[in-house]
Image 1 (tube, rainbow, N blue to C red):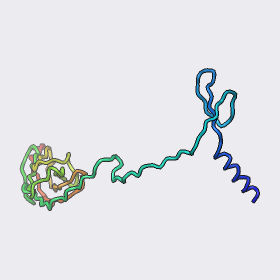
Image 2 (tube, one colour):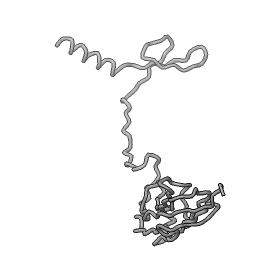
Image 3 (cartoon, rainbow, N blue to C red):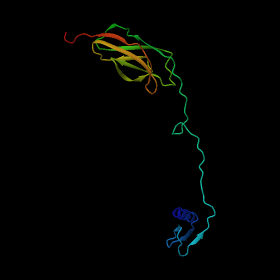
Image 4 (tube, rainbow, N blue to C red):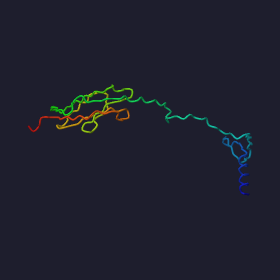
Length: 172
């Protein structure tokens, strides 16, 4: 109990500490709680405190306003050519995939089309509803077109179309 009383008295003494001000030989003003020859006692009436202003909470750390995302349209996407299970004869191995999208792609939302050929996504998303694939090997292949948003999230996909590419043999 004695130690608690001594500690409390020590805190009170330090709370009302005196502040001294003096100028050294180089002209620097120095403040201290220790007395110094030629120091003047500074009278401090009240202890200064600061209460911060309340800052409204923001949803983004950058301070940008949040724009409400438009809801994605109910897209329908269909590969119109090549038709399913069709044979294509092209010695250069070129196949053009044409797509019908309804309603039209929403440019403001940055919705785009991607094509999967044999299960692999080809190229960058695009707004054009026609894809030209070149130098395709002979054989059976699949194609599917998807509509993606600006984050590459798939919004809608077409049915998978299977086609058969026939090319002349280089052995003959």
